[in-house]
Image (cartoon, rainbow, N blue to C red; front, side):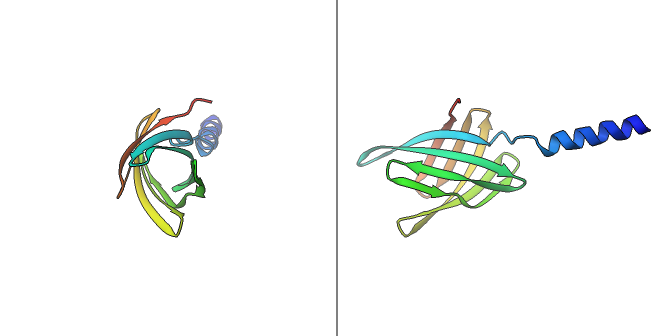
Length: 112
């Protein structure tokens, strides 16, 4: 019984520090009338909360109201007096699809 308890505690400790497959740096682009718009995300999952940043050639903003449920997530980004609400889904370890009122965008993981 003592060994079972030790193994159970070790598994619980390791799973508490497990990294989400959404965590990391991601890159995508969107075509606009003014050319290609490159977007970089940094995602960090903390429990059911999604944190991170969104960065473009025009600036950077923090992810707000981020929520994660399994492989699906949602968040908002505020900039230039407007807010964009988005949803996303982890398709595989190297691909995320983001959807919002501006359309759909594919993100790929940035290898470090």
